[in-house]
Image (cartoon, rainbow, N blue to C red):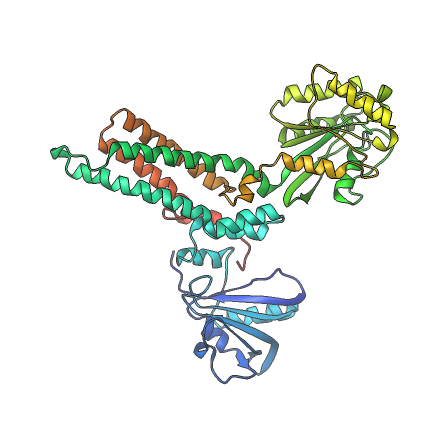
Amino acid sequence: MIYHDTIVALATPSGAGAIAVVRLSGNDAISIVDSCFKSVKSQKSLSDQKTHTIHLGHIMDGKKTIDEVLVSVFKNPNSYTGEHVVEISCHGSNYIQREIIQLFLRKGCRMATAGEFTLRAFLNGKLDLSQAEAVADLISSDNEASHQIAMQQMRGGFSSEIAKLREELLNFASLIELELDFAEEDVEFADRTQFKDLTERISFVLKRLIDSFAVGNVIKNGIPVAIVGEPNAGKSTLLNALLNEERAIVSEIAGTTRDTIEDEISIGGIGFRFIDTAGIRETKDVVESIGIRKTFEKIEQAQVVVYISPSPLAPKGGISSDALKEIKKIKNKYPLKNLIIVFNKMDMLSEEDIQNLKSSLVNRKSKIENVQFISAKTGQGVQEFKDTLLDFVNTGALRNNDTIVTNSRHYDSLLKALDEVDNVKHGLESGLSGDLLAIDIRQALYHFGEITGEITNDDLLGNIFANFCIGK
């Protein structure tokens, strides 16, 4: 893929606003804009101006003035795409945006495809493939954690770690290949002990990166939290309290929620996707039964399950037998799920009732952990509940600025690379010949190259950049 034409697109969201930015990139970007631009102060053409400069003037269509604009000039190779880039900041009228873009199309530009500016940056060596993908993640980040991960990857943290492993493996691969050239002389250029140590180290790093995907994936997409429990326990009230808005209908009538309601908020910089579900109970109502079935489907998908029990309704402030039965059912069916038991409506209990409730939990043989006492109606204990949710997220890697994998394509390539490195390791232990070792080494190098883009194809690039917005 080599592009010589000049592309144009709206770089800001479509629709009316205070300003809009029209972006051009290509060999003729500066000359095309120059032919339509009349500077207010300078008599110089844009081609004669220095790179990274801004100029006030008017975009002209013949004698017709379209708008007063600011034109930013970035000359190759010192631009985002590595080509000549011009950005026109105009007023945000839909009409003005349309007129400027159509003018440039008549002057010889082509409309950019999705992600084509970033694709050109990759093809011109301004970004590697994992950095280019991080651009899309940065644009879509909607909380502090996902933003931090995308920034770390875009700065090349992940790429540099992969590149270092690949370089070390490549050095030994060269020595193995050299041995093949002197096969008749039976010499070893690659120290097998050092090589084994290297494969152990690479394997350790790959496993760490692979393990980080479990955290990275949920941070990127939002951690799903299913709010379940008996009807009228306060599930919808809790959702409203977390969101600070009346998102779900709240009623004293049991079984009000018959379908799932989802919304996302950020807690401590981490995105949580809360799912309010239908109350779990025996019912003959067909619609409510469908809602309860969906509840268990959402529990299956959730990372954290919050079971709410209406504690004031239980005898003497203790946990009801129905609630205990459902909690045990969830724990047995989903033993690996993070489970929080929330006793709601604490504003309706006396201190004595609360103490009785706590004692009943402590004295039970099957100890129930992660217990919270709240009043979703008054907000009592809601902040402590949020803190408990954060405890389930391993943010240590974020605080230490460690590399966290969030991209499923990278995850797949890392798994394949680890498999090949393990093959090399087993080959060394069993005394495999150099030519057979070289095959597994080449495969491992191939999968490393897939991540950063040293090895790619047009179909892969098309799939990746098709998910970008136009103008980026």
